[in-house]
Length: 314
Ligand code: A3P
Image (cartoon, rainbow, N blue to C red; front, side):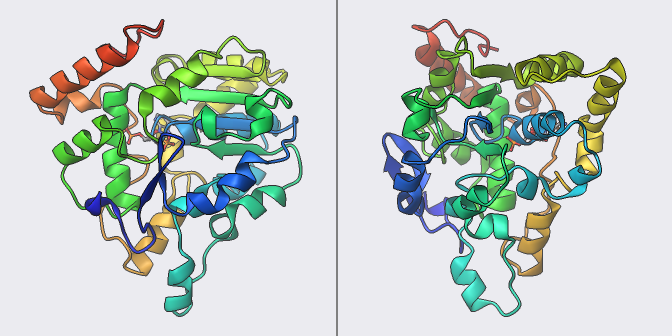
């Protein structure tokens, strides 16, 4: 894991079987005992599976397509619960003159608590690390889970790790870490299957990145129905346009420019790339070696053979 630390990511710890950044230990109890608001909507996902896309879709639907307020950074509109554990800028803020950490990164739990309800909360936590009230179904906020083919997820995660986490290894090495469940929020399959097994619960909507790519208006309709919001055909058209890859790539409120610019400004990470990278399905085919693809296929087979999830075999 030495390739995966940086000035703001000091190390890793296994929490309840999940690879987590070291600082998560400090917030685990508070999240576990979180007083959950049933009006909130939780966007849950394994990293790099289309979280930002789903978040923007859900936030827009929850807020009656308020494109004006939507110009505010997504991190401030739809806070990322555990983000301060992932990007621990505290020491840097003390070390670097003029270093300003955006409030939603600084103390993310407090930031979520300070929001007016209902909040569209993003989290990469697997089901077993969610607040106890949710796991025990004492509170049932709506949850939207988005899943993506693990090979594309891994490729996207590799670029993300280079761009935002200070990863210095190569792609093959990253694939091995991914397959060994040594990237943050892994194991991938446990993450996905815990939500898949609950997909018929009233408060859970299970989406797939590949379906959103194939037919975005359907995903918008499905999400609006799940959130009990009616949308006109015109609204569906304008939201579909707003959520297209090109629109999102050029939208500074959602394209993570704020963080990449911060990293560049303070020379924390100097890797040329964009968060909105390719937005495609099957991109792994041009980057992954045949050996790694074979390893992935075996891993997919082993992890899904006793389940009814059989979508990602290709
Ligand atoms: P790629 O790196 O494969 O391009 P997350 O938000 O979970 O971190 O996921 C990021 C991935 O979703 C990136 O994948 C990003 O390009 C893709 N993505 C974001 N918005 C998208 C959109 N509107 N259409 C398609 N893909 C999108």
